[in-house]
Image (cartoon, rainbow, N blue to C red; front, side):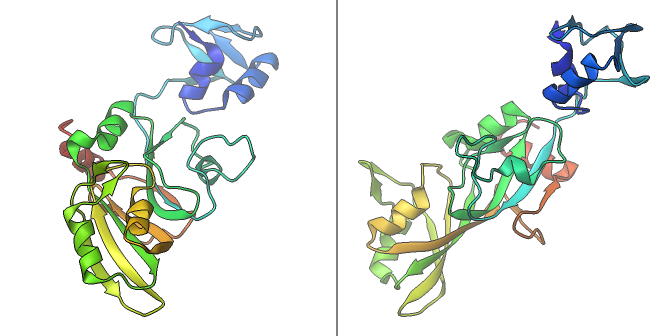
Length: 240
């Protein structure tokens, strides 16, 4: 059994609050009878639900999104401080999706959101060594010996990081641009790695995740993953 408002929310036709309003307005029928009781429960497998005469079916398809997260946006669905969240950027998506991993407030770039808990869990689990690639603008220019430390693994919180792929994209006395690839997911790992070799990260952008790239997505824009892209993600974590 499931609450009627939750059923309508999961079907992607309304938020729970909006569904409650529809119920109170007498717009919702269950098995031909108008329901005006909030909290009313139904069997989502057998009961027939209508809104304004239209039959509603609960979706069984998962939703997979790619977002180009801008700086200054929180990777969460709600924020007690009322700061902008990724949820505000994907407002038209009615299904409840959640972010796969994190990008901190001042970082930007590729972020996946989905309602497929099993796939999301595996994409974040260290066992599957999902590749992540970042472009990092750094204050100053690290010496080759420092870059070698990153490539071989560096100690953070008493544990050595896995070897990283590090390429110097641009050089300069005041700042440079690095491309860094990792398959771990420690909190603020890239920023802390740069700080550990004595430099300050100025800007960080995730440009690749599990083989996916942003393509032409501009900051704040999002799109649905294609079926081929979803299949590739699943194959990487043995869900094919």
